[in-house]
Image (cartoon, rainbow, N blue to C red; front, side):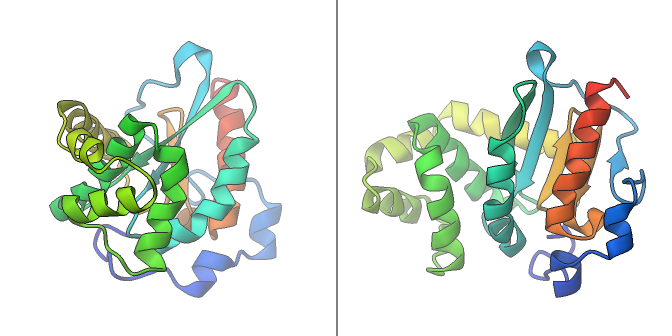
Length: 211
């Protein structure tokens, strides 16, 4: 979703379709992906880093999860993958803190899909700490530990770092994929959410080759 239109989705054609010609052509800079003018540090230990930028409230991010998760699971050993929650408005930083609180508790992989389901299927916005704590408790988590993590200095620090990373990548919509601090692509750029992963594969190869 775009920074300027959080409540407005991409069109169905843009989100779900790609022209046959676009699939056949090599991805082009400025069209299918963006090259950052000021590159960031790449992955650690010589790995190519892939970053998924998302927001729990974004319906396109919700649709992207079943697509990107198996793709991420198949990434080769020389590629690292991480998620960065994005908030284009101050009131949405609660979802960033939710993400990092779950991570701090060791509950993230168990709860990540459930948060999307709660927001988009159950229509539970999870926009208050107490509501989040109740949600975690319903799924077997410790309510008090969640609130402690949510309010911790560590979670607040990671939330600030997430903002800095999204700003450094010049992310203006989600979902988006950053590659090795040098490129990013998205469904809007690539023509579909599915094709954005093909573009990401191309960009990983570019980064691996030092381009």
